[in-house]
Image 1 (tube, rainbow over the protein chains, first blue to last red):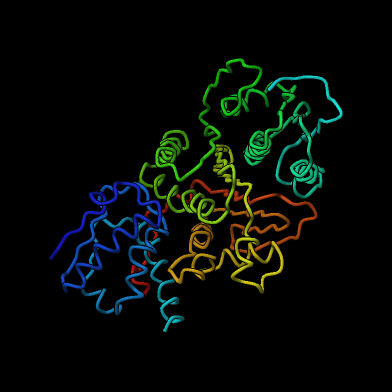
Image 2: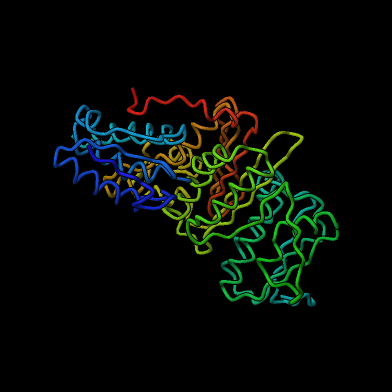
Length: 100
Length: 304
């Protein structure tokens, strides 16, 4: 199991799409190896929907949801993180349906 | 900038005594249309006559600053007649308005107030500013630090990201905030002078015909020019603000001739305006008490 500390990769401000894209690339690499991942949000001050869209929404487009639920786990997810994450996932599901 | 006699090549923009959204947008003071006309004129000098202002909202302080800066960027000589009303003048001083512009080459003393955040021009998403405004919310609006951070992330950061992702505003954006303690309310105002939501969306959504329609669509989940062009997961920023503020406050968006408002109960009010506000303004009115319950947000993270 791999633990990914977001703050160690992009700092404490996950404000935009670019930061999210960095996280996507790392998670995508680990998922391709079939690894189980814990995403640790400890120390994050600010995060935006753009970050969640790029980091996690794009994973929904690429992978099966059941696979992601099995492989991706979250630690130190605040109420705000859940709020933003869940909305990015909701949009990503719609986009995936459109693309299919 | 300095005060001189008004000459023929000079345009004068007069601010009304009550400077609020309703007086400038709905009451057709003429200020907005005169400002829009001034941008396409070849005037060499422009006077912003603020002498009669007796009351000013954060939105209007943003607007005055943005108007002045856009003329400065065009090389126009910009002059201001400062308010006669001492309380308004002090408010603008304390808001840091005079720190944004050098006026009469005098150093103006700014005394930050506990009820307002200094007016700030942003040219990018500024992490330091997000930290400062979080600190202000925490200490002066008496909101726990974590809740203040969440409030800034879900509301302010989303609105600012929208400016830099879509508006193409030459001046970036102006942000101001005010706490109304007696009403237990916070106001955040973000203003850019960019292309507006209609211009941003119409190329990828040709079915959109008006500014009001563009705002209504922009607030819906997944509506974004970048999403359509890049086929990416984008376009939930305004949707998130709207979703968060249902039951917690009000949200107003004004873009050119479109006006859209979400009331506290989620009801939507839209209007086609007769005068045009260049760019986009997002005003957020947040019930302080209700955001203290933000920790109770209950979201199933995978949307089930």
